[in-house]
Image 1: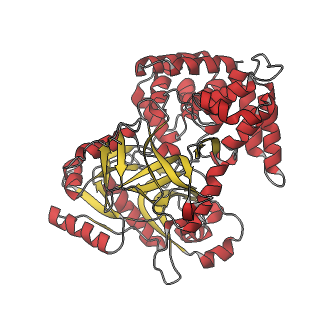
Image 2 (image 1 turned 90 degrees about the vertical axis):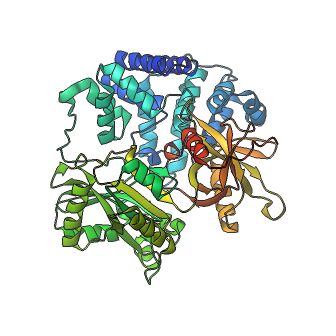
Image 3 (image 1 turned 60 degrees about the horizontal axis):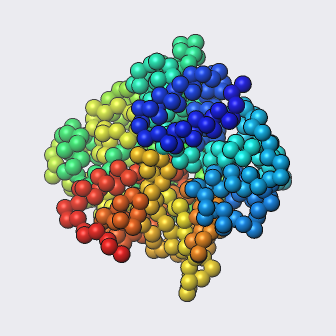
Length: 556
């Protein structure tokens, strides 16, 4: 059985390696030495994923809870600020705390041992579930050496900080299996989980690698759109053969239908079927036809007018009082793509064929499609965009009529054009407010994903855009994610994703990213997105280079 110590030493080595090629080779060699079951787990752990994609929400373990356990075992609860000041990151702080135990266990855990405890914690439900989860976690840390505890903590908070992104992991899996990277990426598109990809690549055809014609039993990651500045740039990237669709202010859903079964998944691939019984009822009109749809759900007033995105989020994940919520928070469903039909995946077929099939299927069941147009000219496309903005939409999504559906990929086949400049960022810290905001965490440190070195890099702060109720709500939420506090700044586990509008971007030596947003304000909380879906330094750099006038560097 592979030891957790060996895993930890590989992680230490990766953190000290600059070359992407060397990192992929080292991780690939490590995975190749493991048994298939262990390699599946190790691949997830290396990218900071404690459970398979779509199962993460079952864990419900906060960084704050992990620190309390580590501090309790190390008898250093009163020295937290001192430890976090000396530590490089959260995992390092946990290691320092555990080293203070009188009797520090020798490394003895296996990767499988950790997996069994994580699975046990995820399975705990019902009354007193939080206490039982923490008891199981405390037992695990009590058995772990300080170094093992460091990496258990890093896995649980999903912040490895050694530069092993999912894309680099796919390169490692290719080296592990001596398979083309393209094959590995294709498997990941269909599976949406690097652990399952390892199993498929190791076992080959015997592992059940799904051909593109196979029916689905699990969701695919949603295809993503590349942000562009305007309609002209969309034409330049996609060419003249394109369609435009209204960009809705709702939540992405993937719907699987077949026989008497309808299942609904969020963009994080979590099943949310019980939360949206209306969608189940509407899709039942398909008469049991097997299909997979990509669409958007929006919240509406009883008279049909759209409601705020945050109202919709109160429905997602709820399993109680759903009938009451149906009356208080009605929804509408709009479909905009077809991924499978009659048991066969159609993601490789061009968009013009998929949308034609979708229109036929939806019409027969009375399902709505997102508003769309195939403009014959640039002028017509610009008018469609202007009309969409005037009607209250966020903008449009432009889609090449020739494009395939590429799950989980921000490809060049789709482009989104929005009225406001926005980015999806992660809150990594917050400052205590003063004056009217006294007692609230109200100045939020905003970060992008560092797609070069891993982790997150700050690009600015803001306290703008929230109501008093939202200030109170996010304060409670961030305190549950607290991992350290120093001089009025609370450092939090990078979990909360927010959509942030801004005027422009400037160079800034103040931030590690080298850039800062000017006049940033929070538009909405993106509880439907994971931190891994936040925008990257590369995206911000691209936005900066696209600006016609670049502000002078901030010298403050």
